[in-house]
Length: 250
Image (cartoon, rainbow, N blue to C red; front, side, top):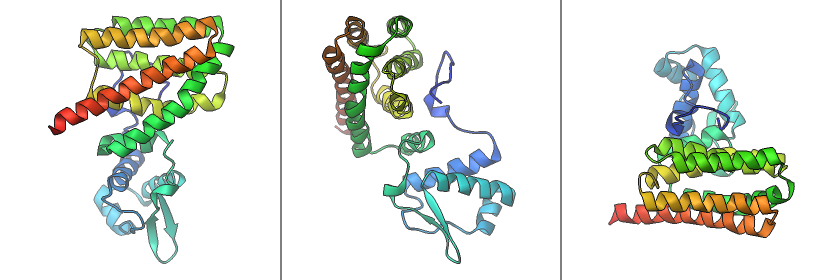
């Protein structure tokens, strides 16, 4: 998902497979995430699902198998397919993150994502300051420049922002850091959907400068400065979401 090199990136259409299997999986996954099928409930039987979706038994089985691999459901002999408790869900799975976004992620869920970003991304920035290559550093400045030139398109901005953060994960030299790109993606797109710095010129300039500060610290090999600069970026994005949410509720 994060590797999509589209110039105009629309997260809300990402991962929406046109295959029958993908359609069934997404429909059931969304219903589970949204609570339409609550935890510990039993999904409708195969006959009902086959009639609803108009697919073959093979397609249905494959969709259920995929949902089970994601930790959402568990088939039980003579009982049916049970929705597992949330503690079993693989929240790092890109599809599950997308479905939370589509279902309308709660304030608690978004806050939890911010906490995870603060736990992981500053460390990635610190490692990047110590391990980055010249080519990786050049890419970081490339994406900062792209963010600066994206004055009208929020999609262009968020895509460049995402690539910047992925670039830091790559430059950290730790493969586990790169694996959290889906988490970063949901956080960024949710932030920009609720409150985008585009076309707010003051907010836009400040956001680009904050990201440039991360790149500058990485260039200087200053791990602590890189960590702090990353914390600032994550916290400011979280504050924009909180402020926008409060304004909507007022």
